[in-house]
Structure formats: C-alpha cells, structure tokens
Length: 303
Image 1 (tube, rainbow, N blue to C red):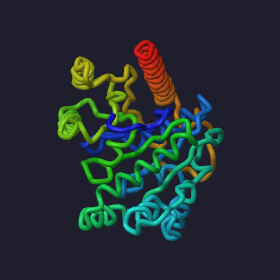
Image 2 (image 1 turned 30 degrees about the horizontal axis):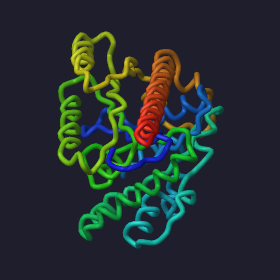
Image 3 (image 1 turned 120 degrees about the vertical axis):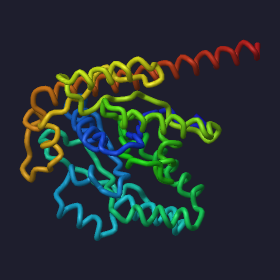
Image 4 (image 1 turned 45 degrees about the horizontal axis):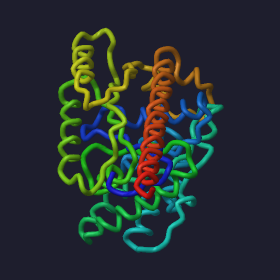
C-alpha cells in the first residue's frame, strides 16, 4: 500500500472519474444504513466543491452558516496546507446531521465551492506533497475515532482526489451499467497503474448503481462488469428508483429510515451495507493471519 496505515483499515474513497453515477447518494445511503442497522459511527467527508453530500445532511441555511463561519474542509485545508499551520480536524466535523430519526451516529466534514480555488493554489504553489501529508494526517486521526469513513470524491482526477486515493485504505467505484460510466473505471485503473510506488487505495469493489432491473441493456452491462474479476463487483446492485432521488432532498422534519428508504431502496442499501462490512472484516482477518504468519517466520529465523 505504499506506507503504514495503522491497524484500522476503514477509510474508503468513493470514486469514479465519470460524473453522474450517484456517488453522493450512495455515501448518504450507506452512512445512514450503517448507523441505523449496524450501530456504526460514520464520518462522511465531502470532498466535492458542489457540496452535494453536505446539502443532503443539513439545511441550506445551516450549510451556508458553516461556510460563512469558515468551518468546512476548505478552511481546514487552507490552514494546514496553504498556511502550514496546525488545524484541529474536530473543529470542522459536524454531528447530529441528517433527517433519519435513529441515524444519530453520522458525522460530516462539509464542503464549499471554494475548494476548487484551493486546489488551484496548491497547483500554483506546488504544494502537492504538503497536501498529501495533510490528508494522511487527517485520515490517520479519524481512523481511530470512527468505525467507517466515507470520502465523497468529485469526478475527474484533481490533486485532492489523488491524495484521497493514495492515502485512503480502500476505494469503492459506483458506476451506472452503461458504456460511458464503465469507461470511467478504466481511466481510474490506468491512473492507479502509473506510479504504483506512490501507494494507492485497494479496490474494495465496483458498485453497480442506478440499475433498471427491467432493462436488458442494464442487465447485460452488469454481467459484463461482473465478468471482470478485477472489478470485484458487489453482488448487490442499487436500483434506479424514485425513492433514492427523493432521499437526496433534506427534510426539515425527521423521518424514519423506512420512510426515507422504502421497499427496494432500503433492501438494496441494507444488503450492500452487510456486504461492505463483510468485505472489511474478511480483509481484517486476512491481514491478521498474514501478520501472524510473518511473526511466526521471524521467530523461526531467530531460533
């Protein structure tokens, strides 16, 4: 993986170089499902200048206040990267977010459209190394505080997205079952192969999103994606249903999980969350066995 990431491997960049594949909705749905049905404490890091995830978890007024008060990821990064000053990440994380009544263990590190300007400054001043160190420090700190960390990355391969992809433990790639979205996966694969020595998140799996179960074309693309072992496709696809589009609209009054994610939407998210946790658990078990084997080999060599 390029460098030591600590014992907890729970930081996941949600990424596809193609836009419009529903990354932000997946981050929200997974965060609330993991909170309600698995009792997990989840941090959603909004790394998209459009602040989609942030606006899904709070009112526009609340988000604007955080932005005007300088309490977003932009302000954290400006302090730690451009000003090279210590910045306490806790100051920028917001709790008690979302509109699901029993999803009370979800937290957000909100975003702001100024993120694009920040990235321009990083490139202009050639501060890529400092940016990566800042992201490494942030992920190192939040790994031990939260059960799961989901990073909503914007489409494309910006300097900030590259830092997440190189410093996170895992990446999940949501894709629509169509040709153009699948091309986004290939771009990501080629990028990953460019500088392997720099480290890169491990592929946790490709997630087929916004699938129309009645479409022969969608089913064909799903089979095609699943047929490539490198994709490590999640068994559970997320359907294209109106409920998930409505879920993205924050409601001022709280609602139950069932009301927000009825029928197929809730069933898919619950199955996907279980599969996600199973994959993380299997990876943890494999790492523990490998560490144990290495320790045994070292003991034999010493003897």
